[in-house]
Amino acid sequence: MSHIDPTPGQYVHDDRPAPDPYRHERRESTARRTALTVQTLADVAAGFLILWIALHLLGANEANVFVEFVRDTADILSWWSQDIFTMDTEGLRVLLNHGLPALIYLAVGHGIAARLNRA
Image (tube, rainbow, N blue to C red; front, side):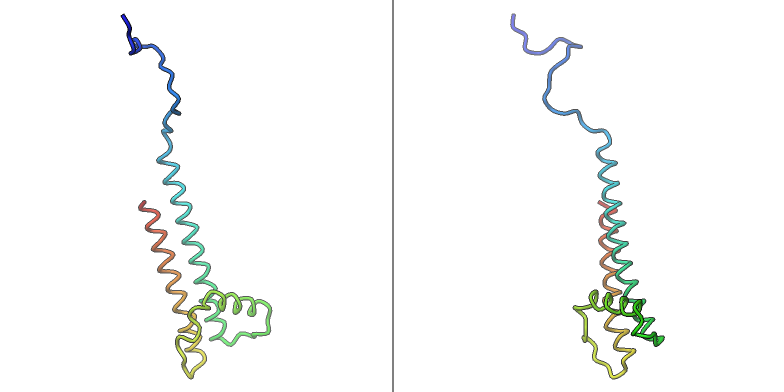
């Protein structure tokens, strides 16, 4: 009599790898790390923009290397929103043209991070 099924307790050779019992935990951990990275990048970008607004409104010396670095970084981060608002008051113009991207970076970055944490 030909028997295809193995007898109980007999080892069956299977080429499939054994399932990983920690796969779900690793996937959640990766999502959390990615969410934290996205959130941190958004916070740093908004921080540079807010720092430039504060330095400009407080009348910082724009010839200073640190102030130049912050201004250049803020200009790079807000290139897409430059001159959306054209006010006569320079301080208000800087506040609006750099404050809008700061708020958008915070909202989008934290929104993406929240979505990744839920996944």
